[in-house]
Image (cartoon, rainbow, N blue to C red; front, top):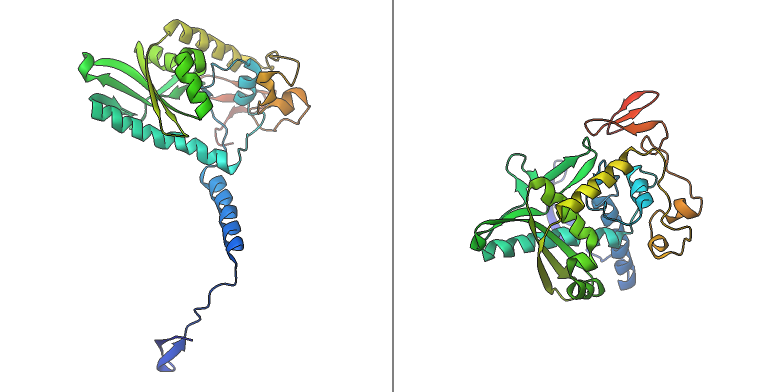
Length: 287
């Protein structure tokens, strides 16, 4: 056993034995422990949280009830560790797109210099909005302003995107960009997509639809202020929209609703992004 020279007030300098034996774990046990730690790390690093506002990124979904369930916090969706890490992949890809567009001559800003945060919209008394991936000027196109949106896709989704284009394959993404465009007074957008399977890129220059954005803001207003769930999109739980919906259990199978101040029948949204309880008054955001 190796030794090291050490000092103690009572002993003075002396040689201390060092235990350098390896832990008695085999390769399988080490690997298994790493997988367990990976799951714990992902859950701790990327916790599931309710969103305080109704996101412009989801308002284009077909099912009004699904949006309302998310808005009223009837269930906190707990994604598995792999999916949580997958969501972060999108954030990492945004930086690569930003670097590329800057290299091509775009003048791109991903944060508002007045707030040092992402360009953010806040509508419908502070209850509806979202944050754009960026706003840019195309320097070699007469400084044309554009909304930038960057997304990751699996191979199947990416192939469909190339075939059908943005509005045909991903209308929800187009709706999101149109919402930003209307309120930032920008008429065009650049959509950048990456195939996660092979790193292929896709770009599309689109004219944004401000009229569609107005329709969606009205839709958001209706969903925000209704106190009861909108009609189901279909009574059959096997319907393609319902089949993989996070709220299928509540909507079709009688699953218990999460109890909190947002899901409570006595709460309602009021001005300045706040909520009010009919019994106790304004509800603190951290309550």
